[in-house]
Length: 162
Image (cartoon, rainbow, N blue to C red; front, side, top):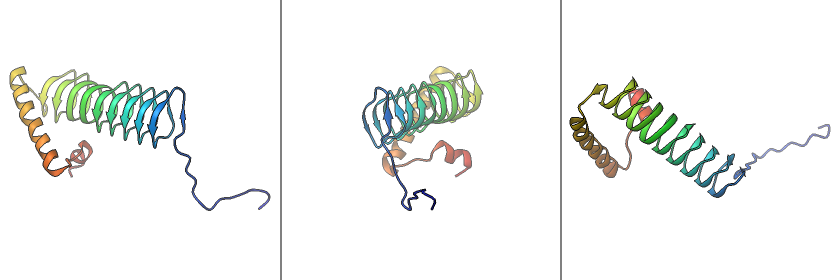
């Protein structure tokens, strides 16, 4: 073989961590991060689990692709989000759930393709009091379904029509 060695077995080189990192388990290519569980390609993140390709994030679970995000669950391709759940391609948004392609929005549920909006359910903007009472009811229903079925559809499932 002309001096070239080959290996028939796949080789795993996990837990490649650099910079000032601590308290990680089953992580790859992470730097300057701490308290990570099953994550990869994180930079300057903390308190993360099952997340990947994120920078400057905190308290994220199952999220990927983005940065400067806090308190998210299953959010994809996001930037500067806070307290969000099941979002896709949302940027500079707060308190949004099951939404996609939003920019600079706050308090949106099941909202799509909006910019600079607040207090929306679907793509209908509501008065503050009506929004919060309906939001409370919808989040209660989501919580109940998650509690009984132990799973709920993702935003990607909804967008695909599953």
